[in-house]
Length: 335
Image 1 (cartoon, helix red, strand yellow):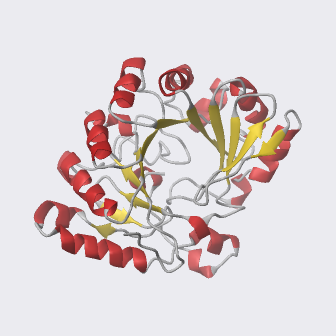
Image 2 (cartoon, one colour):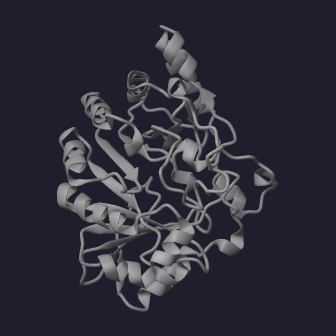
């Protein structure tokens, strides 16, 4: 059966964080001054096992869950991830995708992921300029990330590229990025810098709007609008005369809360109903200690049916409901 929240949004899409660890330190997600050698990450015993993840997916499958995205941290740091993918596929999930920084994606790994049922890969790339790239992510290997995009296209036939755009940092590279990949079967998704978590020093002056990005691209390329899925976060456009597509993810200036069908499962077993959540619901204890998963299923249904999250809409309206609200870090909840 399909369940809906208070705003009639179905639960169809689950993003699963497999680890809170990452080998990169992107400033908008895991700034190096916070996530340093002294930062306390989750212990292995605190992480959901693959069996526990599968049990939770099976519960949500009863609500007509159809899509899963594996995230982190960096999900490819989780050993034997391909074994989890094939078992999720065996449960009947229609689409499984993965978001990665690309650093650990070599050809053999990509082929194994594809063989075991992964349907698509999204790779994060915020700059083509070595100096800017190091400013955003001091641990990044730019050439390796670019290589991983070509590997993903070779194995999966296409790839998505996530570009978080920050005003006066990489906002001058819009044309360069589009021009670099315009003849490849990719969707370049420009993402407005979001206020996820408490450590990325977000403020509105650092946001470069999708409207500005669209204008920058239109100076050099013709774009025509594509039809979007109802629940899509990305407004999609086609580059005329080229292969690449462009996506705009505009959580700040054009919130898409009204169609959000996503839930999130953290690496240590907390269920979240919004990317900007302040708290989650502990499902680890039930998965690990209770033989009665029907009770957990009832609890999840009850949580979702009471859901009223629309943080981005409230933020845009300058509602006091978003002021001074502590939020879970992106690396913990899976962006």
